[in-house]
Image (cartoon, rainbow, N blue to C red; front, side, top):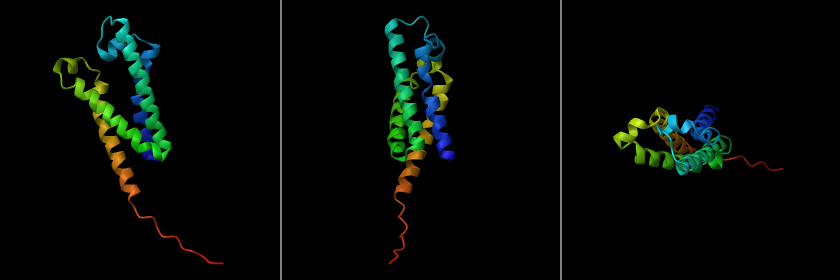
Length: 134
């Protein structure tokens, strides 16, 4: 039950960039952009949709076990890629939203632990069941 709550929280926070669809003005505070052009707005809104889909997949994995590892692995790859493209540059890092700098690394660790836990669970031997004869 605790793992399910953690996955729901990680999924919900992951999906928050979708808010840019409803309020493009948030792009300035979220990404440090002032007066972005229409293509930049569209690309960031598209990113919001993709993040919403990823968040939904993580939440789905909280309830549907076969989706858990693929959703977690996809989130690890995408979050790591985003951090590798942005956080390594001091100028971009200074303009980044604190949530990305703090939440994404924590989420990567949590999701890595989720994958490890699922792999460990899948390797457990199934208890032998007693066969009863009529």
